[in-house]
Image 1 (spheres, rainbow, N blue to C red):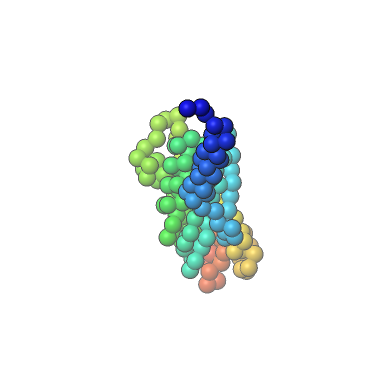
Image 2: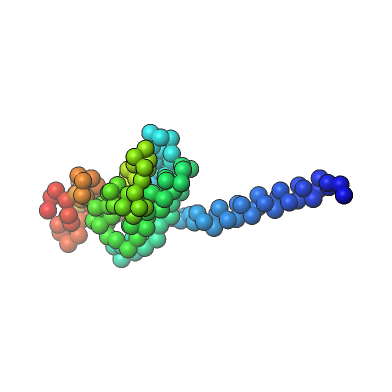
Length: 165
C-alpha cells in the first residue's frame, strides 16, 4: 500500500483545525472587559488578564500566557482567586496566595506568581481608573496587602480602603 499525499495533507489540516478549536475553547476571550492588562516579565513570559465586574465583584475573567506550565497555573490561580471578590479583596491577593493555590512552586519559578499577581493588579487598576472617570474621586487610593496601591472610586462620599481611610 502506498502513501497518498492528499490524505496526509487532509489529516494535517484536520489536526491543525482541531488544535485551533481546542485552544480557542480552553482560552476564552472577553471582548469588552471592565479591566485588562498584559505584562511581559523579565523572564520574557507574557500574561494577560481580563476582568468583568458585576455588582462590585469580579463576575467573569479570562487569562492567557505564552509561558511555561508554571506561568499558566499562576495566571489561572490569580483569576480564580479573584472571581467573586470585590476590588479591595482582589488588591489583597499576593504572590504567596498564588503559590499556596498552586501547591507551591520551585524556587526558579517564583517569579511566575509575582508576574501573575502584577498582571491581575494591573487589570484591577485599569478597571478602577475607568471607574474613577465616572466618579468624583480623583487620586483616591486603595492599599492592598503588601503595599500595593491602586486608584479607587469614591463610594458614599469617602474612599474605601487604603491610606486615606
